[in-house]
Length: 245
Image 1 (cartoon, one colour):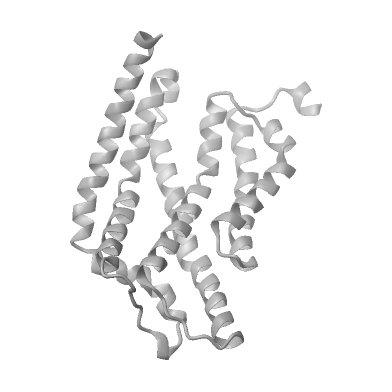
Image 2 (cartoon, one colour):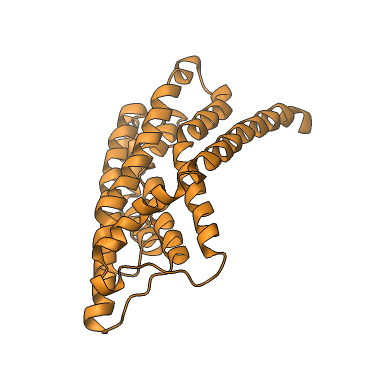
């Protein structure tokens, strides 16, 4: 059995090596621009902070350095996504038919675009609304003075961006599974209710503890689930008797 798995393990190691090398190379490139990148990341919270609390602070000596490294790694990961998706496709392509292997460019492009769309939706819509609500609640309701730690903020920010980026990959995952014959449109319709429940639980776990950001993630995901049903129906439609049942 090990001899049979050995070629797959070698290919997996090669794909992982190329992906990691891409991230490492882009990390050093991004680290030289970390101040500019950090300004972009700070922009949403600075826009909603009161004038007396515009300055973001750090509480540990190593926090600025670690934050710069975290920001550089995060940006390097985003930039390397096409290569990562490409390597993933190369790993699974031996199990596909020749006509399916030709879908590598659409798959890589669509997966990268959907992740970027999710990240942009989070950056321009979710984060400003969620941060404004949370800061206004503390300042106007509790009369607190916001003191934002850059390390905690960047960790919170990147978690949201990655969560939305991965969540928007739902149609891509559906396309892949439908191509493999693992799911069809009848399966997705049958599990619609439980899927909506899972979506809302996932949204509650990945967003701040406020209803606004949770709904801003859950509602688009429900829409993407509907799009996924249409994709599955196009790629791997259910049999007529099974669909009727």
